[in-house]
Amino acid sequence: MKITSIEINVIEMPLKDPFLTHLGAVKVREGIIIKITNSDGVSGFGEGVAFSTPWYTEETVKTSLHMLTDFLVPLLQKNPIDHPAQSSQLFSSLRRNNMAKAALETALWDLYAKSTSQPLSITLGGTRSVVASGVVVATDSTTKALRQIEQYLQEGYQRIKVKINPKLDYSFLSDIRREYPDLAIMADANSAYTLADMDQIKALDDFNLMMIEQPLSNDDILEHALLQKEIKTPICLDESICSFDDARKAIEFGSCKVINIKVGRVGGLNEAKRIHDYCFEKGIPVWCGGMIEFGISRAHNISLASLPGFSIPGDISASNRFWEEDIITPEVNVQNGSVAVPSSPGIGFEINEKRLQQVLQWKDIITF
Ligand code: OSB
Ligand code: MG
Image (cartoon, rainbow, N blue to C red; front, side, top):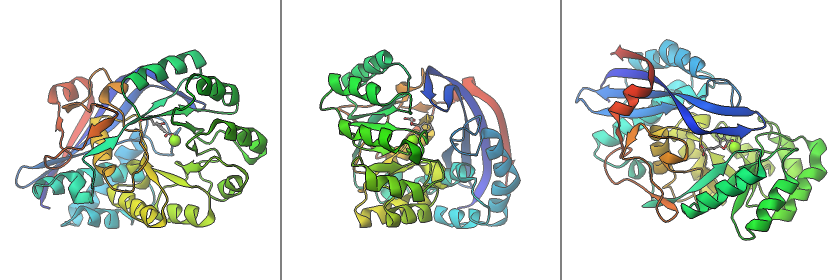
């Protein structure tokens, strides 16, 4: 892979509606779009999914830029690679900063797939031509949640995830269950509970949830195992799983029955695939998590979710779930509850240059 330049773009776009969790509201999304070009003039794209503030993980847009410009890009300049998997090896000499690493690594995968004229899904070992779509409702109002669920079901989404916390759980979920007795619902707590809330969490077994996502601390594996022994609802881990080893330990300890794989959180597609392969072998279902992302990360998620172990609809929603206009063309669309996996080389979507320029805040080009 003879790299000639790496372009780093910082963009910013307002969400159509604020995204509310117990940790705060996201109203405007900043993000990083990476473009890596090779000596044949082929470009691969990646997206940095850290937020402006460290509310979900410790990374931010600024820490990502620091890691990219001061460490990760220089590592690639000094160490030419032949395959994207070698970049995860290279980046492992730097601790964590997984979203910054994934921004570059995913761009290398797109570039590699394009330079071998293969769809990224095939390069990764994908087997599906469509992936099932799910969507997230993130509001603290039951009325709004019911209205949004109705709209999303009309749009065809196959499952709904709702954000919960100790002040918004039992009666919120029973109102939703009453309206939709058969709906595939999962609840995401984003670490809002502790083991002291055991009885309150146990009560949620009443709602036949597909799973409860990350009820306990963001960095915990042990206490989730204690909790899983006490509740019927399967636990899904999100924040706690930042690497293959985290996934292996969580499964060995019985801390979860499902894993949400996010490419950014685990440092790239190579690690995401390793986690997928391990879970597939162990019979642990996985699904692809969302990050309120723009089209580039959305596209990488679609290719990843085409792997056989992604047996549960992920946070794979249409571009119009969050954005008036996305930065890719065509936009991601949901049809009959699914998104088509592209069959053209790489991620299978082009950059919408006009839209990118409209939302661009800052840009740097590093030549090799
Ligand atoms: O906890 O899964 C989460 C969005 C941003 C940060 C964390 C989470 C989320 C979501 C996914 O819930 C929303 C989406 O992009 O579909
Ligand atoms: Mg989550």
